[in-house]
Length: 326
Ligand code: NAX
Image (cartoon, rainbow, N blue to C red; front, side):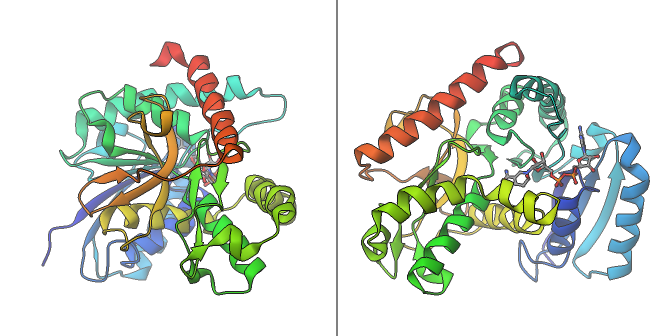
């Protein structure tokens, strides 16, 4: 029997948590022969709700689950974790400016970064889902400087999956035919889904679509605004699709990327494509199952470059707003 992978999840009693935990526990992330231990972290007022979630996990009798810890204590929660999924964060409320939100959540991610550094396993990897995820990730990473910067990820896979679905529907192919879709920049309305390097059945997606007006007036805004459209339709933000994207992201790092393909995730920039070093920015990544690299040599047309620059500038502005926390 393999030794368990310990996964710490914050915001475990929230709506993404409710879709995420059962898939991890059932083997939907690391595979059907990989045991998992779950460290579920919540704030004190949500501990009763978390107790209920733990009861349900118990009642699934998942054979792969070796242990479940439910706690509001960050030291206990991140102890020996191999993966930390930072899902919980304070949502934006009416009248709150982006800067206010960054400040409130920033302090949470300082504490979480410190607790991860102090308690987690040596091979810890961290995926930040809670928004604003790029900057929250930047703050946590800078609060845990002894953990290498290539272990920190911010989730833009939901944006990638959304973009693939839009292209597949436009062309009329199954979504599995759409590959090489990179999301660049911030997980925000400035993010840029690059259709000019994406592929449909091996052919450049923008050629296959052959409808520039659709790309600029429909595709890009639809992907950028999808989160808001779901809130409007459902009365609640994306949850199952966000949990699915978190699973996809971790699996994309845990298993090697398919030959010739790439995936999107916010990583600490090494200066590739002129993106300022040290920013947590989404870009195309390939994994070999142990480490990852930025896909090099992609041609970016002027339109793409301008859009990417705008999103990177937003990331730099966010960093400026939280500079006291770095
Ligand atoms: P919920 O409000 O349903 O759940 C969040 C949970 O986090 C709550 O149970 C809350 O008690 C807990 N929490 C808050 N602060 C905490 C802390 N300091 N430590 C531990 N737990 C804490 O939100 P949910 O729909 O699950 O969304 C969670 C986060 O994901 C939000 O920040 C949301 O904006 C973000 N999203 C990110 C996405 C992405 O693509 N990166 C997409 C989906 C989602 O919008």
